[in-house]
Structure formats: structure tokens, C-alpha cells
Length: 263
Image: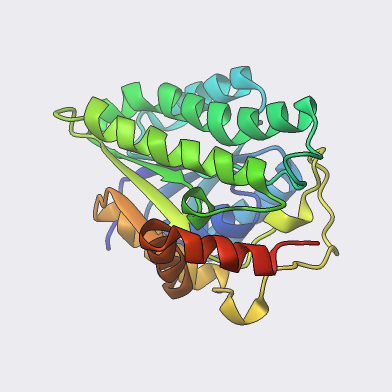
């Protein structure tokens, strides 16, 4: 797909799926505004895009701090004059059973994955309406199934799904599409961030490696779904199976979740 003259903003773009989508959008001709907290990592993404002949610029944005979200959008508009695509990708997982989680754990999880995402939409939408652009929300198949040991994360992604459903109605007639994307297991850094937000690059990913999609493959199908203005997009193959079982055979899904739950 040719995306010449498109301005794309991606939150949480310093690594993982955010970085992958930035590279994919840029390869198709878009100008990419990448934002995150780690500016050194963002600058590396920008350099990589520019080395391939693309256009990109880095912006500081911490979705736990609403003021930085608004400021980031203002800076992008000042630099490029418009916004065609906004991808609310920034997020993380708080680990622990429901019994173990503290009030601070819940507040941080919901502030990042729900409030931060919702405010990303809020500040992007007035500009997307001017271009009849595209909004994308990054959820997870965890939105549809039991999540023992990561219940706060699953709850936050269920909220993301509902926000997407609500936006489908609220944006009707505006020309803006909203695509909610629910990945299955994809190679990313989400399991390497602890409950306080500290990044541990050498922490082992506990997810099954044989089911993991590479980031570049995932990024291609995610960008394609956004461009096609799909309403809800679930992938990988195992992700689709899990969502199907969770919807139509919930008792079976609970048994499966019990077998793989941390003991």
C-alpha cells in the first residue's frame, strides 16, 4: 500500500510492535511520528527508518502522564500540520494474582492501558476528523479469556475492546475509522517490564516460543488491518482459536487456563 503524504503517530514505538509498525508504515511511504518514554531507543528507531530512506521523528510521551500526551500531539501538528493515522499502542502488563495485586498495581495498570489509551484517542481525534483518518487501538486476545496470574492485564484489554466498540458508534459519520487489534503471542518486550515499569532486557519470556509470531510478520498484518479500516482484527492463528473457544466453550477455556496457570 502506498502511504505517501500520510502522517502516522504511534505510541510505545521504542520497541516491539510499536517499532515494527513504525518500520512498516515508513516502508510504505508514510511520515512516522514515534513516541515513548525512552528517547534513546526512539532515536534509534528514527535512525533505522531514515537509513532505509524513510521519514520519522521522535517525541517524548508517557501515557501515564496525560499532559505529555496532549503536548506530543501539539508538537506533531506543529511539525507536520496534520495527522492521518494514530495508533494507541503503548501498554504493559502488571503480573500477579487478583489476591496479590495492590491498589497501586491496579491503578498503574488501568492508568496506562485504559486511561492513557483513551486520552491518546481524545487528543488525536479532532485532527483525525479533519483528514478522515484512521485510529487503531492495540488490545490482546487476553480480552476474551480467563487470565490467571495476569488478571489486571486481561481486564485492561477487555476495557480496550469496549472502548473500540463504543468508538465505532461515536465516530459514525465522521469519516474516521477505529480498528481494535487483538494479537495473540507476538515477540515483544511486554514480559520484560516489571510491575513498576522498569525494563529488564535479559528477562526470559515465559510465553511458548513455538506459538510466537515474529514482530515484522505481525506488524505487516496489523498495518494492513488499519489501512483496510477493519473494525476488529484478531490474529494469530492460535489467537483466533483461543477467542473462539473463550466465546463458545467458556468451561473448556477455564479448564485450559487452569492447566497453564502459574501454581
